Every structure is written in structure tokens, then in C-alpha cells.
Image (cartoon, rainbow, N blue to C red):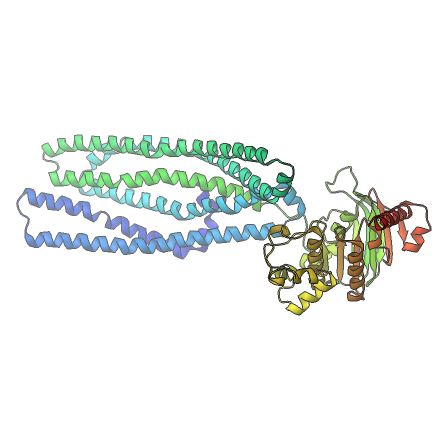
Amino acid sequence: MKIFLDLAWFFKQEKRSYITGILLLLAVAILELVPPKVIGIVIDEVGTNTITKESLLKWCLILTIAGLTMYGLRYLWRIMIFGSSLKLARQLRTRLYEHFTSMSPAFYQKYRTGDLMAHATNDIQAVQQTAGAGVLTLVDSLAVGGAVLITMAATISWKLTLFSLLPMPFLVLSTNYYGTLLHKRFHKAQQAFSEINDKVQESMSGMKVIRSLGQEKEDLESFREQSEDVVQKNVLVARIDSLFDPTISLIVGFSFMIAVGYGSVLVVDKELTVGQLVTFTTYLGTLIWPMLAFGWLFNIVERGRASYDRVSRLLAEKPSIIDGSLDTVPSGEIEYHIERFSYRQQDVTDLQDIRIVLPKGQTLGIVGRTGSGKTTLLKCLIREYDHIEGSIMIAGQDIRDFSLHGLRSAISYVPQDHFLFSATLSDNIAFGKPEATHKEIAHAATIACIHNDILTFPDGYETVVGERGVSLSGGQKQRISIARALLTNAEILILDDCLSAVDAKTEEQILTGLKEERRNKTTIITAHRLSAIQHADHIIVMEKGRIVQRGVHEELMQEDGWYKEMYEKQQLESLVEGEAS
């Protein structure tokens, strides 16, 4: 029952609803004692030939009132208890979602998307069941069971009650054993569900790749194997689950056998009337539900405990990025003073001896081979990673002093991986500025050279794109992402190799538009195609996490190095392609 202690914070929060619901349950438990008692009295009156029309009507009226009252009370306690459990699910789901949004990339490298989705669906549902049906079965089994036992012992025969309960210790031992097994097996079943959830999510996102490589059969076979694993683990849970009802019914059956046998002896000895024995066996039948509910309670509680443990472990993960106290939007000169940075804080160094000063309003171009550290430099600026030896400052203030909201409000970032939501083109562009007018959206799209493309779509800006922009080309997705970043008009614009899928002419148009649009605002561009950064105010060349060259285009062309060699090579390629066309 540890789960109820773990959820004590919520029960305290909703104590009024739960107390009201429990009191209503207790009232129902007391009212359930009325019908067996009335039946016993009527049987004895029939046996002694003392029943009258008036008394029969009286007992029927009492039964009717009791039934209608229980009907109303059961309706009300369901609202109180089950309604509160829905609030718990909402709170936990909200806490999980807020937790997800506050976590750094390292968290998402550790946990797979499908696993996180399983926590937010199946696990939350299992905890909700504990706070709803679990509380019901706990209170109902104790209230009804306790009331019936007290009534049987106090009003009929304590000896018969005691003898009838002799098999009950076996019930406690068996259900406790089943509960322990159920907890272990349900935890494994939930983990298997997380894995197949992740498999489906990955397959749906990567369906183009699967089909292009002809791996449909292999992917389907892999899914079947995981699906079979989920079935097997849930069958193991069901095998334990299915033991509760037969075990309880068997033990209650022994109680009935004792009650009828010993009760008949007491009737013969004149210690009980026939009506009292009928009332006793009816009460004993009433005990079947509390006993079954007790077994069901173990089922619900162990499922809820396993799921709550999984959710709690997830919520216990601490963000690796600590929020700063300055809730202002930074603006000014950007300075890099990084002695060393490593993603895993190990011996491998990803950045080393980085010194950059970028005045406000100027453009910085960053180039270098794949894996040289260009994107890493940008991720440090937006604080995706924080464990740098050294500092990055804006207007003389360490970026770690700013709140994440304030810092990121100053930055528009267009990453290499362009993500578009399952929404309209207009909504995708206005994602960072939902209140933007159509004129503002169209203006940003025009600068990004995607406006004319959008107008060719059947519904224009209201065209709905699939998840990840599956209905768009790579170049169109890049330009929509650029338009989305431009619309926010942030102090700092970061373009991380986001012009690779557009042709040279379109690239030139976008860069010209950016230069006009972003006067007096800072821009950082990384690229493999040097034409994208040759007009930058500052250019740095990265190699193995270090800056190996720096200057403007003309200065770098005077040096014998990677920049000059790559620029001449790319110019030659452009010339050859031009002649071929």
C-alpha cells in the first residue's frame, strides 16, 4: 500500500472530495446491511405465521427507500472519487510535459521518444486507476466487510462468525503473494510497451528510409517480434491476475460450507432461527464483493505502484541547464572565451581555446569540415550545453546569468534538422509569434524566398503540411524554417547550415534580403558552401574544435589554407556545373 503514501500529497490537496466520497461510501455500506436483515425478519414472521399485509408493505417500503438512497449516494461518490482521480492524471501529465520542456538534449539522448510517450499515457492511466478505483476498492472492501462482520457477530452469532472466518488468513497470504509477483511482472510489461511504442514512432518517422532501402519486411518482422514480447509479458501478468478471483471464490466457498454446516447445528440447538441463518448466509454472500475487491485492490495497487515508480524516476531527473536569475533579453556584443568543452565531460575535447568577439549588428561566418565544431559553438551560445570551461558573454554579461527564457528570446535559431509541425504553413511560420498578421507572415516568407512557392499550393498559406514537412521538398522546408526565425525579429539570428538545399541564386536572394532586413542586428551563419558567408564581417575556420583561420573573405584568400583551397574548389565546381547546364 506504499502507493497511497506516495500519493498522500494529492489526497491532502483533494481532501474535501475524498472525505465526502468516503463518507458516502460508508453510508452505502451501512445501507447494504438493511436488505439481508429485512429478509431474515420476513422469513421468521412467515415461519411463525405473524406476518401481516401492513408489515409486508412496511418492509417493502424500507427496501425501496434503502435502494433509492444507495442509488443516489453511489452516483455522488463516483463524482467525488473518480472525478478527483482525473485531476491527478491531469496534474501528473502536466508535470511530465513541463518536465520534458525543461530538459536539455542530454535527457533526450538518454530516453527514447516512445518510452516518454508510454510514461505519459499508460503509466499515468495506471496511477489514475489507483487514485480512483484503488481508493474505492480499499474503502469499500474495508467498510462493507467491516460493517458486515460486526453486524454478523453482534446481531446473529459471534461463534458462527468466528468459525466462518477461519479460511480468511489463507486469503491474505495468497493475495499478498500474488501482489508481489504482479508488481514485478507488470513493471516488465510496461517496459515492453514502452519499447514497442518507441519502435512504432521510429518506423513512422523513418518510413521513407525504410521504403527506399526495401526494408519493409524486415521492419515488419522486427515489429512482430516486439509485439510478441509485449503479448508474452502481458500474458504473464494476466496469469497472476486470473488467480485472484478463483482463489477468493474458493476460500469464500469454504466459509459458506462452514457457515451452513455449523449454522445448521446452531439452528437445531435453538441458538439460531432459520431466518437468522438465512440472514447470516446472505451477509456472507455480501462479503464476496469485499473479498473480490480486496484481490482487485492488490491488482490495481501493484500496477499503480510500478507505474508511479517509473514516472517518479523520470521526474527526478534534474535539468543539466540551471536557469539564471536575470529575466531580461540580452542585447550587445557577443564574446566567446572557451578554454575547453566536451559533450560527455571526458577526455575527448570538442572545443578548445575559442576566442571570438562579435560586435552588435555584425555578421559572423563559421566554416570548416564536417565535425569541426561549428554547430557545437552555436549550441553553447543557446545553452543547450552548459558545462564549458570558460564563458560566453553578451554585452559583458555571462549568458549563464540570464534566464533561459530571456536568453532564448534574444535568439532565433534555424538548425540543420528542420522540424515542421502538422499544421498550416501560416501556423508553422508564425510558431514563434502566434499573434503575427498575415502581412508579417508573408513578408518573412518573401525574404526567405518561399512566398511564391506557397502561393502555388492549393490552399496557399492555409495548406496543411504533414509532420516534419513530409509534403515539402528539402529546400522548401529550409526556407520555411528561415521565415519562422525571421518573423520573431530577434536580436541574434543563427543559421546553422540551413541553405544547403537551395540553389546558388536563391541563396544569394535570401542573403541579400537578410542584409537589408537585419540592419543593426547580429547574425551568425555556419555553412559548407563558402558563398553563404563570404560577405560576413568576420569569418572563422574551425578544425577539430579549434579556430585555425580568421578574418574577412579578402584576407583569408590571401592566406594559403583550408579557406582559400575550398573556395577555389567550389568556384571551379560551380563553373563546371554552369557549363554543363
